[in-house]
Image (cartoon, rainbow over the protein chains, first blue to last red):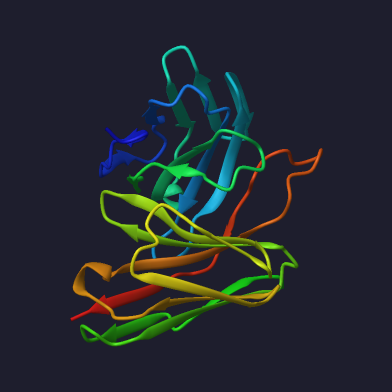
Amino acid sequence: QKEVEQDPGPLSVPEGAIVSLNCTYSNSAFQYFMWYRQYSRKGPELLMYTYSSGNKEDGRFTAQVDKSSKYISLFIRDSQPSDSATYLCAMSVGSSASKIIFGSGTRLSIRP
Amino acid sequence: DADVTQTPRNRITKTGKRIMLECSQTKGHDRMYWYRQDPGLGLRLIYYSFDVKDINKGEISDGYSVSRQAQAKFSLSLESAIPNQTALYFCATSDLPKTSRPYNEQFFGPGTRLTVL
């Protein structure tokens, strides 16, 4: 079993829709949870970061962590075509941990 | 602009050839990483280095070697390439976590698409 599981998609939604992207994990020691966004032919870039459980909001993006269920989510409100990308969840045990475990990524397409 | 660059961007080679992928950064970060990305498997860590004298194996180091020539340069070598090393390779850098940013944010290069025939 992989430490981090992520539905690969692809996921296609109309512009303006609310998007929900999710990951599950098995290692209860994970404390730092991140979402990276990767555009086609580019490297991933950090989108959101959350420590431990709870929600964090940044503009149209909300990251949610439920440690009791070992489940994290990224919500995108009022989705735009420019949000079309692959979204990778990532997590680590410590803040300076060398080892970050990445999900396999979900490919998202927003239809105009 | 401070950046992470990778050369070459694309490479096609044959089984058994030695190949080197290069990474340079102008971010001034001490930590550098090499990952490979495969469909359905995500990013997997090959090697990482916390400073010029520090080299560590990652999850999938077999068949690879690295060299940290300077703070800004970190090279990945495939001593004898094989077809299942066909993948997208990324170099990344990170700084030490700080109070203002208490997490390990990694900055990725644009990637090298490697095909081994």
